[in-house]
Amino acid sequence: DGGITQSPKYLFRKEGQNVTLSCEQNLNHDAMYWYRQDPGQGLRLIYYSQIVNDFQKGDIAEGYSVSREKKESFPLTVTSAQKNPTAFYLCASSSYSNEAFFGQGTRLTVV
Amino acid sequence: AQSVTQLGSHVSVSEGALVLLRCNYSSSVPPYLFWYVQYPNQGLQLLLKYTTGATLVKGINGFEAEFKKSETSFHLTKPSAHMSDAAEYFCASAGAGSYQLTFGKGTKLSVIP
Figure 1: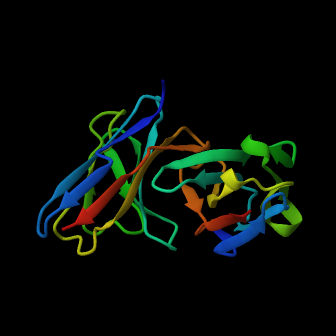
Figure 2: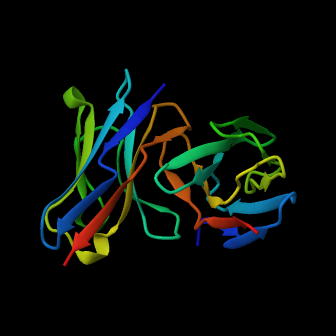
């Protein structure tokens, strides 16, 4: 089945630690996105990529990094510089001027 | 820049009553418009989309939305609410020729038995 797979579903991070969230798609979509979701704030765009080896900052990129070495993969690293990383993270992909397809999300908690 | 406004962060309806979730967009050019639904701790699922053509769009689970250019609106409706409709709903827009989606802040729908 075609779709987007995010892993892990739950992730715990210690203070000062970097963690990487995985996102893989087999929909052959050019564009991929990372969103952060906090209660009452909707979806906020962290980074997006329209093509391999290229990506752009979204509204809240500070403390995050991404890579796009393959069309299918768009991992997100939450660095120690992100002071409030506890949130629900959603990965999505889309084709040109079309709807986005979402993964099931990763819930990150700082312990 | 595009923006999407959803009126009401929380809407409650009785089971069997009409569901109306409001969405207004701002764009100088009619955008592509979408409604998504999110159940707790899950990703977003597309309900319906408007790109071009017929302004009344039918989606899954009995939902529909009407694109009204004069009102810059794309409100979501369902004639009769079901308990399983309780979820959070997001309206989104994309400019024609653009990859980037702009989301509203979401409306949480509660269905009262």
